Length: 110
Image (cartoon, rainbow, N blue to C red; front, side, top):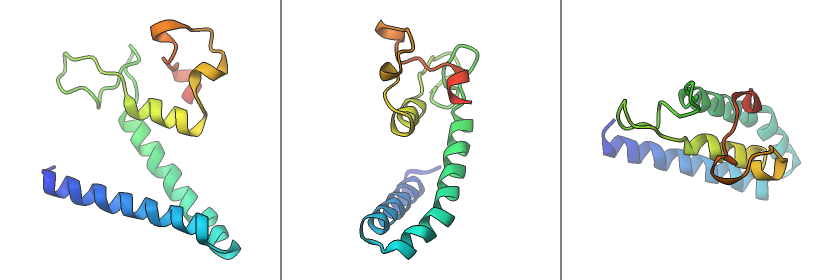
């Protein structure tokens, strides 16, 4: 994807998210019910698609975030999704400390 198209798509998505935030903040109850009925399903479908694209390999590393087949990459999308939807993994007492404390097992996200 070229950078012009990528920028255009990113801007359009950001504008749509801003619009939805505005409706949540300023909308009446009927608007909020409509959002709950229609937009939440679209957002969860989008999130599931993104998470499937960034599924960890057998070593817990993201195939999509690698820039080359031999490079190992941890997935920022998965960490952001977990933090925003569930909370800080360290708050859940996963028993891990140190550099592996943020590693999320496959069972934690399924």
